[in-house]
Length: 443
Image (tube, rainbow, N blue to C red; front, side, top):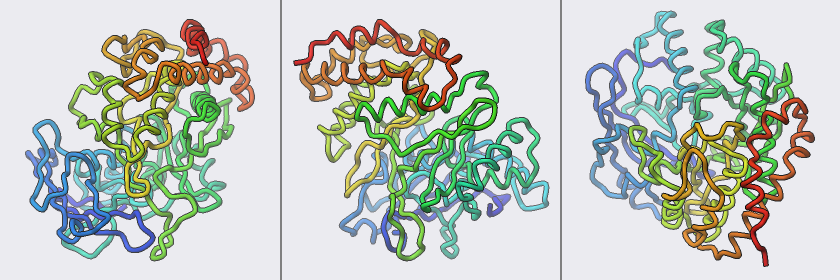
């Protein structure tokens, strides 16, 4: 990783790497600090040449296509698109650990990091979405780790070993530098990394966590994704790979990279623009994102998607799955949109994890009538019109998803989940919810 200088970076050039040619220069991002590296606010100004392009688009709703400088609001210090390109808990810890390694080696590294440091510290090779960052006053040298992920065969076992040592606080400086190159971009708190598949495409690797206990958490996510795929929901290509001690590693194609398409200039896999649902909804990390319901999100899909009817039906189907497998970690950064054919479309589904715990986690409510700690599939059927569906269409979708969820024991067995985990995880698949879903009349 390029050393983070002792002085905070105040200006960054922003490019988009979506096309087959040279990355497109978009504009300048500036930071303002409130003492030390505490980011107070930021501002962005589009380049006039970008504004003149026929294929220009707003990077996110809080960055309208205007020639003047735009500032962040009072409740946010980063615009949504840059928050989406920044690491969450797992990646932030790795950026901090790598910064500490630099400091120990005598490099001009700060003792503490702020939000802007995390944005520029993410590996350029694996950063989420299509953004690429440079120092604004120097040559175009991409900010972020220079090292590239390993190949699939090399990386899986090495990544497991290194991540395990890191979680156990036994990682060497070499281990930390390795993880900083492959594991800073993914969101969330669980351990993740990236690797190159044998066909040259980038994949996300979700790893077991030291706190998983006896459950094969990634294996069960593979079960949920298989059910989703069987129900006709868009999923990334994925596979569960058995690791040690009855646990699995989940390998998923990165949906923000274009399969089979590379840049004619760099030879790199093409990138897709990405925007989280949180950004589309105007939610910052300082907001209470539990207040917005799935019924309200339907309006955002209708306003954002270039194929609204199709994406509304898709999202409705995903909500049915979310409720019927008790996927409680469905916050608004676990939904998103991709740039496709000049517009925004729902990204493939991701982070769908069955949970046997009911009534304790505050999830996204279906509507104002729903209890976010105990969601009811009946409330989804009741708001079908918000998703431009008739009652008959709603019944067909919900009952169809329920039929696929009923197959969970067979699916779990097919991916190698030990039978002794079925009883504990079986609580995720609520009988009352499934029974109602199956009782809906289908014409």
